[in-house]
Length: 311
Image 1 (cartoon, rainbow, N blue to C red):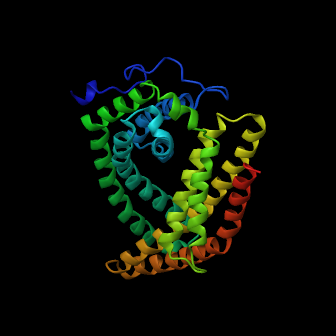
Image 2: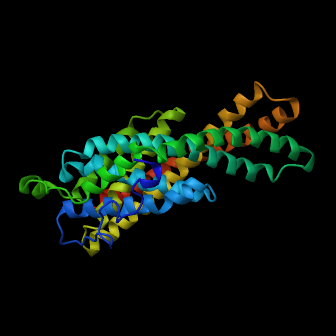
Image 3: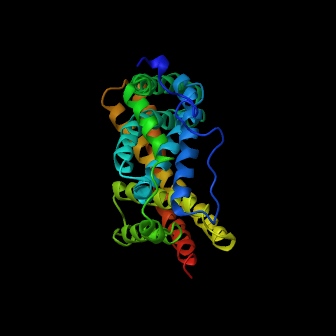
């Protein structure tokens, strides 16, 4: 199969002309399939922009669609068949390639914003600093393009599409699967992770906390489609709270990464670039401290919203 003949549209993947819809009266498996259908269409829609690189937001949204598919397969994949876990693993493979480029996009965009406030005399050194990461990003983008042009990616798309219309789960499994009640599990994991943290948590532990929060958010997005009006409103509050929680911890992680990258630059950069990198590292450490001072308040909002669902 050549790259030109790889399936790239919903129709070529055997998806129906219109997106699959699911309402509160539909069984859980229908909501899972509708979610997979919606996200694979989003992934396909953002793929051309990801390939061209004209707007970094396309790659970001393609990665979000992929992460949502991974989340739903982790929580409820057994409803759509035995192929769910292998597909989730393959989505992880693609996610690594997307994530590598996305991390560079975030870093480069942030550095340009920070450097815009620097003195004119520091701008040339700032541009040389950014160019180091632009070069790294170009190499990562070439690796991503090869992944998107591979037969492995084509097979992955076909396997996801099959899960949207596979054999139904057993009646017993379907009867036991309540998407709203299922939110208790990711909330419990997040709560346990928060309680286990010391007063001044390591950076990696806060990053892991953000991932737990993201899983809860994606599970809530799926559950919202199956909930009746009153509970759907409560789930909406949970989604907002988890989004805010992710933002705080995302800022923290971005600051940690940016500061660390500045440290690596200091080992090889000339004096002017090193001076600029040092100033940026100082700012990033201040941004890290700010996030550390506020994340527990955002967690409290998540905890309250999750508990309200079962009140």
